[in-house]
Image (tube, rainbow, N blue to C red; front, side, top):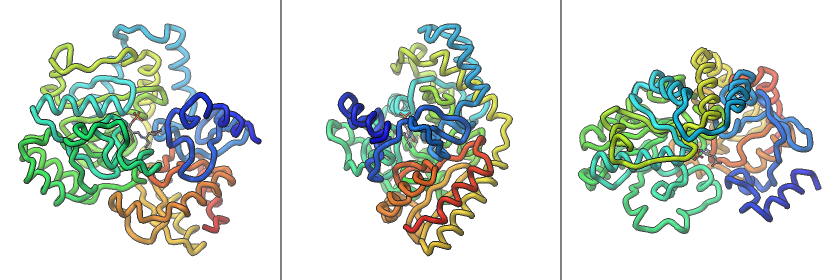
Length: 422
Ligand code: KE4
């Protein structure tokens, strides 16, 4: 029994499923998880001392790579000044200023501790601002585990084939309307029935929780126009895409300005941070200035703010197009390798994210993503891990490449596929 296996057996006695987030248990790919002892740049090291090229990157936050020396230094300096004040600190202001400066749709921003908290708070605010209750979300998109969003969610909910989830009262999801991703006609049909009841449309501007599914041309603009026409708010969930698709996120890359933006992952540089922001007129409704309550003991935590400020400071001067070109050639190499193995794959790629779907058909929404051969993906995961490459233990996630991945590491990812029999 390996040390990871022993630790996992012990962890299952004290932690549900032995993990603090379901997808980490690797159940969907029929493996047990590795316990990680350290991470640096594009790699992670297991407690057995084995080094893996890491394409999970903590599910997105580590765009600079693990243990970036300047981020670590900022956190080390912050920890010497205390770990939590429960009062404002300067880095909260600095991070807020950086987010507002980067995202055209954000004039004011509130820090929270996770993407879940950010999305649920944005929905509460949208409902307060419009005086309406319904929200449209898209099948396969994941906005965290707040009750209202656990209807046909992606990520871990899709991975574990949990239909909705017990414990969520039907009354709560009764106001959650579902449409297929990239289906503007279905969304328009919802508005024709519920126009005056819809508070918001929440969307991943590029979906990363059903595997990577980019928006079809016109989809995001169509959502923007529908919301404008019917007095609903457009919420971009940029927890994954924020500061990854571009320094200004999806809203800058696509030139579509949402009313509210949900953030997480990268803005915390690996520490627990979420945020929601938007137009001043809307955000001013948030307590204490406004009447919409939202709070958090560790919101704006000084360590997390220091990590976020250091991370965005480095990303602001990073060469996103160059990284995108490297990932494009990586995906071309993967396509050629799979073709060489006679394996039909559809690889979706956007900026520094990609997903290998084991299907020859195009993947444009959750139902087409689910048509892919998930058993083959499980074999692919096991094969890649045996060749020192750690990919997402779920076919419904996106691989993440960082600025720290070397050319040799990306070449090793392609080489690892060559011997995959499928
Ligand atoms: P957190 O509460 O996990 O910080 O963020 C929730 C969330 C919200 N919105 C989007 C678009 C997200 O992708 C997420 C969380 N992402 C998943 C992985 N795709 C988290 C991984 C996990 O649950 O362990």
